[in-house]
Amino acid sequence: MNILETLEAKSKMLPEKYKNMSVQELEDMIRSIKEKMGKKLFIPGHHYQKDEVIQFADATGDSLKLAQLSAENREAEHIVFCGVHFMAETADILTTESQKVYLPDMRAGCSMADMADIYQTERAWEFLQVLFGDTILPLTYVNSTAAIKSFVGANSGATVTSSNAEKMVRWAFSKKERLLFLPDQHLGRNTAFNIGVNLDEMAVYNPIENILEFDGPLEKVKVILWKGHCSVHENFTVQNIAHVREAYPDMKIIVHPECSREVVALSDMAGSTNYIIEAIEASPAGSSWAVGTEMNLVNRLISQHPDKQIISLNPHMCPCLTMNRIDLQHLAWSLDSVVQGQETNLIKVDEETAFNAKLALNRMLEQS
Image (cartoon, rainbow, N blue to C red; front, side, top):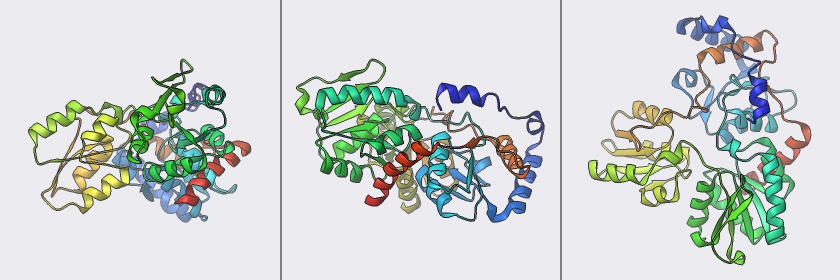
């Protein structure tokens, strides 16, 4: 969310009624509402949500999968998205006009998505066009605002996920000589490197100073990385890896590609959240893993696989503060509001923004 949205959200604070309810009362209310509404209600829950919320999710997954499931579920009139703001926006973009999407807590956001706003992006595009002319195709990670997805769509670009990023970067190079990758520099760098782009062919655009960080001739630049990052994944370090290698010599290290290039290079495996989940599920009993991703998911993997040794790559890691906002109180409030016909924390993307954002999403889906 941007600053204006955050300020607006403060006017919709959790009523005292829900703060004073016990866990049992909250859970009973949620179960009762789910039973009453039946198929008219759909609750998607992102992998990084708390267990207290995930227990009520009708589906779990990454942000794009959940948005697609919401769109496919035409019987659902009300979608209460247990994730963050950009995820609920994507669900609203992909669902029909008759479906309504809600975010239980408007403070639930993504610091990475907020590192690229539309004003910075439009300024960057003008700046880069002067430097490189019409040689750039924009790509944006789905972890971005609807406005950024819309900008990319309007400029012939596409969205990417951590699962299909390599395929989409190859697609972008089939269209233009260069690409601009928003908003996560680490996913962009790791992906481009994996398909053969040299590190010295990658520049970083600094949106705060409106400058290109690059040493060398401009004609050598193939990838322009937006200077953004995931605050959680950037906290996994080469020192963490060195500690695991020393303390647990036989342990495999698996990380998310939002980690830095140095961390990914030193790990045994790197891939999307689903990749991490599936790799651990497929591993034999007795195997051991150090996992470099969000702590709620790591703790869930630990509880789901008692036959395996699983630890966080960073033992001092905390759950993502912005992804971790939704709790039982906010979920109960959101569902209760739906029952009462109130559109509390309704997520609505305007028609023009949604149209161009859908172009970006559909270009990606066509390649999948």
